[in-house]
Amino acid sequence: MPAITTQTPEEIARLQAKILELKKKLKAVIVAHNYQRPEVQDIADFVGDSLELSRKAKEVVDANEIIFCGVHFMAETAAILNPTRPVLLAEGTAGCPMADMIDAADLREWKEKYPRAGVVCYINTTAAVKAECDICCTSANAVGHYVSTKTKKKMILYPGFCITHKRLQAEQVRQAKEAHPEAVVLIHPECAPEVVALGDAVLSTSQMIRFAKESPAQSFLIGTEEGLLHRLKLENPTKTFYLMCNALVCPNMKRTTLDRVLKTMEEQRNRIIIPEDVRLKALRTVERMLAVV
Ligand code: 13P
Ligand code: SF4
Image (cartoon, rainbow, N blue to C red; front, side, top):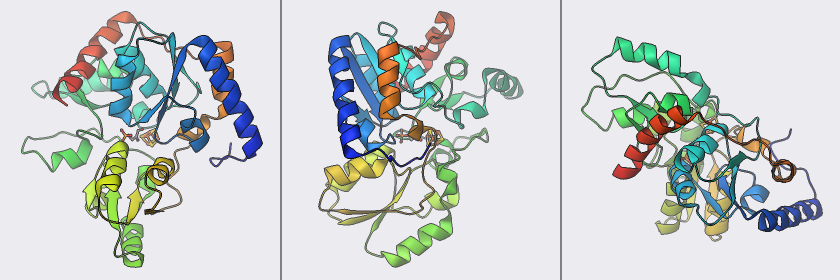
């Protein structure tokens, strides 16, 4: 499936109208991550980063169901936080390879090896892994190697990584800086440490949008998934954004198309089910994060 939409504007408008009509009928709320396709972001009631989507999911009380346009762990987090509403993942096969790099059994083994360590998980983890942790974090509050440079505590890092952000190379950042010396460099913390070190600011996706809005700078070099450019351009029409590497495309995020959103809603499929004992343990981990940020 091509990451860039090949449908005509008329087809897009027709599907969007159908989805919005059905959304009304179902009394559903549609939420989408900042990396979703532009035409999917445009039908969402709320578009945000992982932390904002978690907060939003918790607040949904006046809808019958949540249609989640993102990847599996995000829809799971919504279901952890809001057990009162069915959460349907718009595209059931959209997973996150980073979230799948560790499972609950791997983590239990690790905990046995380091029994005195507190356990922090990135939000890109399964509910079963969250259930084994003390607290969770997102790119908007902390992450991985980058956070270890900001604390004096000893950090033992599990070697997980994002296959998409890993594609951005330090040399590409250096070349982009040379070509656009006036531009401010915004890097996502999921990038490799040597890339993160070249950023003027290291930010989550929504933090990048806020930063670009508030900054007097007119141009920005972007080091994150290309889907973010849609909102960056929409919300900052007079500013210029350069993606530093064309390979910054997450294939899983791009699996959600308007056709899939419509089908999921029509057939009421891909409901996220989490065993209640796992959900309650994972909830404690996520709630602790929400209480401190
Ligand atoms: P944020 O939108 O929270 O910065 O996360 C990026 C990401 O890779 C989510 O999968
Ligand atoms: Fe996972 Fe990276 Fe894709 Fe986010 S961008 S869903 S972390 S693979």
